[in-house]
Amino acid sequence: MAIEVRIPTILRNLTDGAKAVEGEGSTLGELITDLDKRHPGLAERIVEDGKLRRFINVYLNDEDVRFLGGIDTVVSDGDTVTVLPAVAGGTR
Amino acid sequence: MRYDSLLDSLGGTPLVGLPGLSPSPGVRLWAKLEDRNPTGSIKDRVAFAMIEQAEKDGRLSPGCTILEPTSGNTGISLAMVAKVRGYRMVCVMPENTSAERRQLLEMWGAEIHFSAAEGGSNEAVRVAKQMAEDHPDWVMLYQYGNPANSRAHYETTGPELLADLPSITHFVAGLGTTGTLMGVGRYLREHRPDAQVVAAEPRYGELVYGLRNLDEGFVPELYDESVLTTRFSVPADAALRRTRELLTHEGIFAGISTGGALHAAMGVARKAEKAGERADIAFVIADAGWKYLSTGAYEGSLDEAAQRLDGQLWA
Image (cartoon, rainbow over all chains, first blue to last red; front, side, top):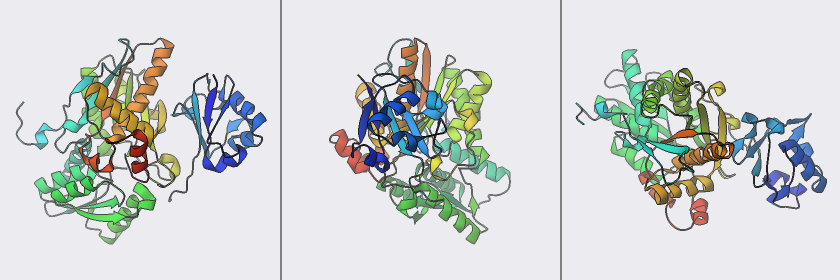
């Protein structure tokens, strides 16, 4: 078993168009590092200076990780992680 | 039970257990049936409180025009109270909301001004603010920033919940104006400091921009993040799936946003179960499913229903 990570349209150029990829790790940070080995450039688009980028939202089983442990949120096999851009082009 | 009028019967809604969906005897789910309000939604509490307050403050007197940006339920509640109390009601509503909501609004005599679908509720708010400027004599109660909104829940919904479920550990509700979560959340913080306050926010597809998604530019003035313990983002397919689970496992016919709240409630239930903790999780049935029949949410496969819902405001 692994952790499923759903990738938003704007980042699928880094996953050969795949909507979801799989990875491993005990924290969100480790998971992203693991994904970056197979999909170089992905980590940089999600993480900045060891923190989640401001305009990227990450959900663990649909729960906002900012309310959990951020990049240090504990993840485990069978979890689903969803990455979404925070600004989808809304009005101001 | 006997009341002097329909408005007097507001609130005091049942809290029912969900034995079919609760994961174990130690982790229980409870639904507050807010569809049992005069016009069939939780917004009756808000509409009534906002109008009462405006009357007390002298902002409203018979013959006045009420203006409100609303994607449905608040408008329906306000229209009913306005009709009974003798006010004219104008709603600003995104054009991509269900047909039933429009019919209900018109039934109680509200005038509807449609705002562009692309901007969602944000656009409706913007248009309503502009109209308020053009008509200084109109009264915009403005549910997103009116303290009477969250106060209604602080004074009624919260105390009702605690009286019915003194062992409450979690409260879960949809995040729109944020009034329910802020009001009930503050009340629980004072009486059950350890209770978790959990928001279920609708996640829309790429067809619908703006909306009430807090990250997309519009934060209701009522919102105070410190009241929340955590926040879930619920995609339409998950909300639909949960709405149908309520039907099949509990016999409850709820609206689609309720499926979103249930999804978050199931999420915290799963975590409590995993951690071996006792939990009494209350969530809000914001309205029943009648208004959403035309969306096709209750027929065919889940995939088909989710596709039909794409591009519509479902919460």
